[in-house]
Image (cartoon, rainbow, N blue to C red):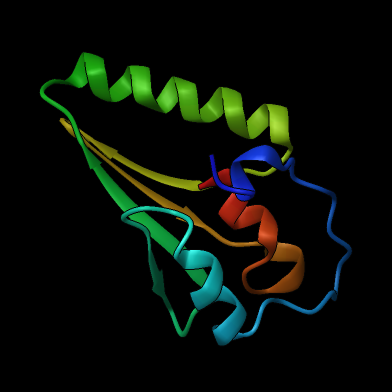
Length: 102
């Protein structure tokens, strides 16, 4: 288990400093299949499923984790697909919380 998998999200303050690209690229090594987008201000991954029922079961699991952690992703949902984007809005970029959530 990676160090990130053992951590919990912590509240971020408005105006805090987001991760640098180098810091984000280093943490990216710990989250399989995720990509940095929007000049390293977003962390994104797409998930494919065989049907809508599996898709929605995944969405509900993501929602439960997000509520537990107090850190909520943007989701794009369609039949058999969920796109997940993470960012820390209070910092206008990525924080360690985004990688913990991933």
